[in-house]
Amino acid sequence: MSREIKIGSGMGTAKFPSAGPIGIVKRMRGPQDVLSLTKEKNLEGVIALVRGGTVAFAAPLLVSGVAGVIALEGAPETHLGIVAREMGVPCILSYTPEDESIQAMKITDYEGYIEAAAQSLDGKKVKLDLTGEQKEGYVQSWVYGIE
Image 1 (cartoon, rainbow, N blue to C red):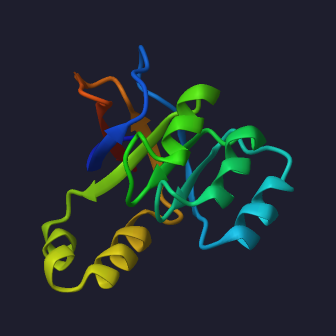
Image 2: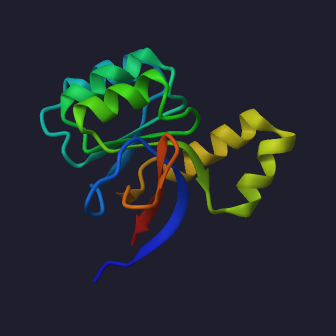
């Protein structure tokens, strides 16, 4: 039997009536990673991980069939957030890991924080939950690790 553990939170682009998709996180470091991933046939079990919501190269992910997207930075009003909402793809932006040692890096070593947050997700089986309270411009959302 699998177990769900909250591993992070962020700002969801739209409220979904039930917990969102489950998938394996695949990190997209740049346009080449996106192009390679979009060539794969079955993406419904993939949660794409990008650095920020302003990365226009991530838009093809939304029409390729990925189950969802996590962005380490950005807000629902960014390009990625707006397009994800319009396409009905669950998307969590400004992801903050629960791990306090990673959170502490955000102030002293921001690039190290981004790398550590990405590494903590890449390859992990997760569930996106965008059922939280509707705030001004976003939905309170969580990421759960599945063990």
